[in-house]
Each structure stands twice: as structure tokens, then as C-alpha cells.
Image (cartoon, rainbow, N blue to C red):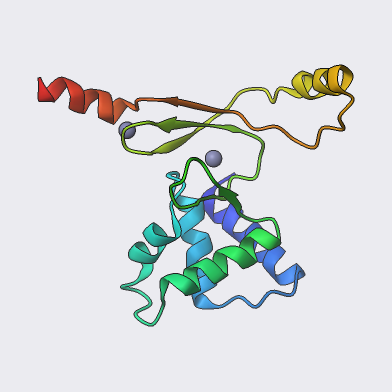
Length: 148
Ligand SMILES: [Zn+2]
Ligand SMILES: [Zn+2]
């Protein structure tokens, strides 16, 4: 699906849930859809502040909260850094750079059997699982090489 179609679909979803579509909300959503970097609220704010001089980081947070509530955005909490936001709502895993904190999508068949096995073994009713991978991204590897 193209970015434009994704944005159109997301806007429709907003309309259906009765959420007012302010220009800022629209811009936050558009930024998330086009950026593949899983930005923090602060990064979104910095990217949009020239366009919306009256906008604050708190406004960005508020917008993200609204988008998250209606299922258009998910909040990622890894480590104790500030939350990052992802509008790719399909199931996928993340790989995180230990050096620069970059998060990339990693597509791998979702490990459903882990959940059913855990249920069998523990008697729990499993709601979800999370797995993330850590390492050093390509850019940071390059940087290492250049340093020497
Ligand atoms: Zn890195
Ligand atoms: Zn992602």
C-alpha cells in the first residue's frame, strides 16, 4: 500500500471514531506514516515545529495518545529511553541498535507456537509476547571502521 493510501485509510479511521482531524493531528499522522524510524514525540515535535509554531511537545503527546487509543499508532517502550511510536500496526518484531538506539522493523513469521506451548506448559492464558533483537546497526558498524 502506498503512503498516500495508508494516510487516507488512517484519516477515515479517525473520522469513523469521531475524532476531530486538526491540521496538527493530520501532520503527526503523516509524519509517522512516512518515517520508518520509529520517532520519539520529541523528534516528531522537532520535525513539525517550523510548520506549527504554536505546537508544543505536550500537543504532540496528546495527539499520539489519541491516535494510540483508536489503534492507529503503537507505543514502543524499550529500556528506559523515551517512548517511540510506530504506525505499522501489522505484527512485526523490532531490532534495536545498542549504540544509537535506532529501531528497525524485522519481519518474521509471528511465533504463535510459543504462545500455545507456553499455555500448555504453564496453564496461563497467554495474551501476547514480545521479542526484540539487539545489535549494532550498519551505520554504527561503518562508524567503528572509520574510527580505526
Ligand atoms: Zn546504530
Ligand atoms: Zn515497527
